[in-house]
Image (cartoon, rainbow, N blue to C red; front, side, top):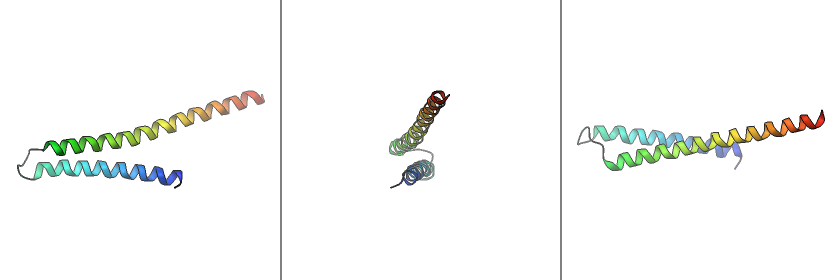
Length: 82
């Protein structure tokens, strides 16, 4: 599995979890008893948000650290050549 494929799978799964959580939370308002959301629905929605947040947060953190590391290496190479 290539890096791009793995990243795409992570992003699509996070988006799918967000959509599933929102759909289930919305359905909780519609089904009887109308206007009341079950504890299970709230727990599932919270887990969907945590999963999506961890996927996006970890991905952004890793890309940021990699960019910082790359810029440090580039700066050292330029300093060594000068």
